[in-house]
Image 1 (tube, rainbow, N blue to C red):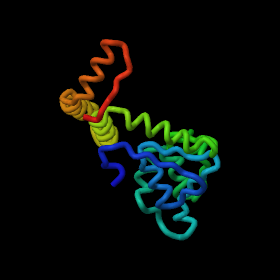
Image 2: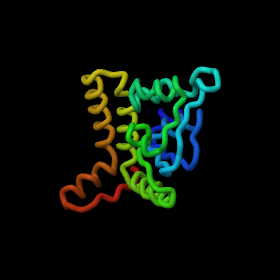
Image 3: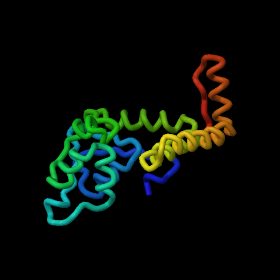
Image 4: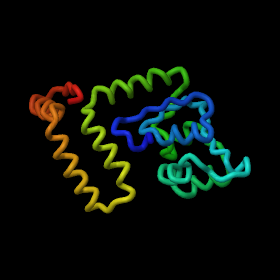
Length: 169
């Protein structure tokens, strides 16, 4: 499942993201969509109940009222509004979509992969844990991250006031 992968998942949307495609876009860690993209959960309008994780994803990202708007009324949501609601990471003009996605991919690819994976895991588990449990998870994650070459590189760069060059180790 996209949610459980230890690497960041980036999604790009042009045109319509409907049903499962919509939920895959919402499940990604970062979704970049063209301004004219549309997100639609048509289940109710076709006589059946939502599926493919919609009832878990949409309320967590956009809140209960907006989830009901999308899932119970079947209302379509444009990319700028989806971004404002917290459903997606970014809405951009279609002509800039590939560049915006590639910039994000480059940024993630040059990051500390272990720390990114641990952060994603902790964030995704945070809804089901207490603050104390979340802080314990952070402590465990920090212990693991501190053992990586990327951590040492981050410290070196901080001390020397330069940009780190992470290698994913």
